[in-house]
Every structure is written in structure tokens, then in C-alpha cells.
Length: 114
Length: 110
Image (tube, rainbow over all chains, first blue to last red; front, side, top):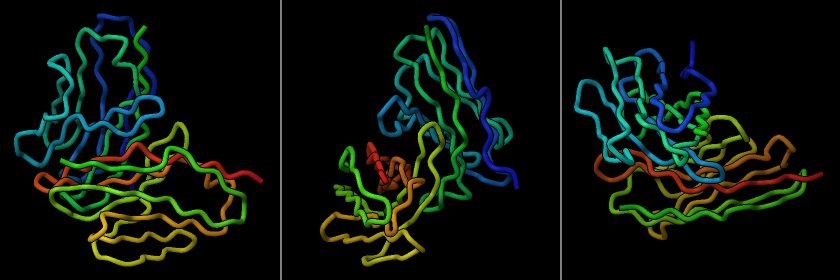
């Protein structure tokens, strides 16, 4: 079956503009994560959705970042008033249930803020 | 909280064996993952250990010692395509949200 997909694959924007990044998880997976990876760095957790529960937003770096997950499936990560330090690869991962299940990652969106 | 430590970079020769270590400190242990990430690509699952000991899967094996807070990934018969970053990750005690190490960049040369 289809894996996790993300769009766009690349996004170049100007400082101060808003961007929306999309993630389509594997069908039926209840858990969805957003991570950020800067060049040469590890994965930085941003936000976690599990079923219908309230998302865990503890990793969001500022209030410029927000995410939603509609109908328990597709998720959108929004970054408002982008800054140059937001430049990174944004990875989405889905998971069948929770916890110790394997995460399946999408190909990522490379965001460049000029 | 959690603290994960991996070497930044390792080099090895094609056909050789390499061991990538991961040491960790965690308040609640729920197993340990290893992921492989090729440059410019997403991480892909390699292994999951929750009990002490060695789990073998083809050329790749993963070892865990919970009492020592230590794991390693063993890659045998190295191939050029094994050049990648190897990430150690632990689901945190309460929420199970994985914390990733910075990754070990493995360079395999002829």
C-alpha cells in the first residue's frame, strides 16, 4: 500500500510569509508526528496526534507554529511569519497505534526561508 | 527526560564489520529503535529492542543492555550503500514520543 506522503517536497519562501506543509499518513494509522531536522542535526520533535485525543504540542518552538489533523487523517503544519531559522526539513511520521510501533516517515518537505 | 549519545561520525571499509554505539539515560524505558537515514531521504526502520540481548536480522544486528543504558548496531559485510546516518531513538516513559539521538554518520569506503 501507499506510504506516508508529504507536500510540497520543496518550499522556498521569503521571511515573514506564512507556509503550510501537508502530510498524508498511512491509511488507518492513528498516530501522527511532525519532526524538524536541520542540516547535520537529529530529529527535533514538534507535535504528536493520537486518534481523537488532544495533540501533544510540547515540541513546538514558538506560537508561530501550529498543526491540525482533520478527520484523523491528513495533517497540516502551519508556520506563520517565517524566519530564517525555520529553514529545515520537516518530516512527518505515522504509526499504527502508539508507543512502541514502528514509525513510518514521509519523504519530508525541505523549507528554505530567504 | 532523556539523554541519548552516539558518535558523530565513523568510517569503515567495504566488507568489514562496524559497531555503532548508543548510550542513553531515561526515566522510563519502553524499548529502543534504530533507524537508517540516507542523505536527503527519510529515516527507515531497522530494529527494535525491548529485552536485553542481541537481535539478528541479516547483515544487521542490534544489541541492548538495559542495566547499562547501552545499545549497539552491528553491521557486517559492509557495502557502499550502507553509507548513511544511523539514528538511535527511545520512546519516552510517559507519552511514548520518541526522542532521537543526533545520529552517527557512517562512511563506507572501498
